[in-house]
Image 1 (tube, rainbow, N blue to C red):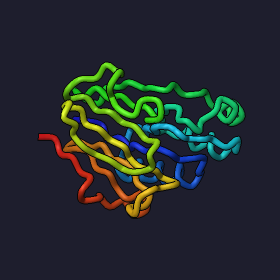
Image 2 (spheres, rainbow, N blue to C red):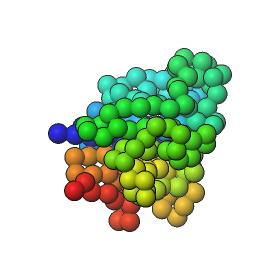
Image 3 (cartoon, rainbow, N blue to C red):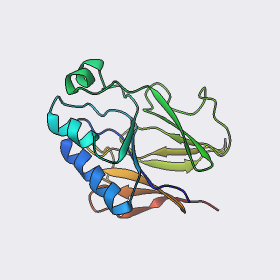
Length: 176
C-alpha cells in the first residue's frame, strides 16, 4: 500500500498556508508533506513549530529561499533536489527554476518529477513517460483555479483546491 503524501510549493512564508497543509495532511492521513521550494521561512517561532509537527516535511530550496532566512528561522537550508521512493515510483523534486524539466536529472520512464516555481498547477504524463507534477501555489496562485496542492494516494495523484479540498477535474491522474 502506498503512503499518502501532500505536495505543495511556493508557501512564501505563510504560517496560515503551512497550518492548512497540516490540516490537509491530518484529513488525508498523510505521512509526509513535500514542499517544492519557496518556503521562505520567516524568523517566527510559530513557523518553525509548524515544521516540527509529527508529519515529516521534505523540502527543496527555491529561488526565493535564502540561507539567511533559513538560519534566522533556525532551520537547515534544504537541498536544490530531493530524491525519494514512493512505493515502486522514483520521485525527484526540485523547485523548477534551475531544473524546469527532468532532463539532466537522471530520470526515466515511470518516474515522477515534481517542480514548483510557476505558481500554476500542472499534471501530465510526458512523451518521455515521466509524470510531471506542479502542485501550483498555496499562497500566490497565478491561475483562476486559485491556491492548489497535490495529493498522492493509492489510486493516483490529484491536484486539489487548497481552500475547499475539492479535486480539480482536469488535473487528475490514476494508475492503471
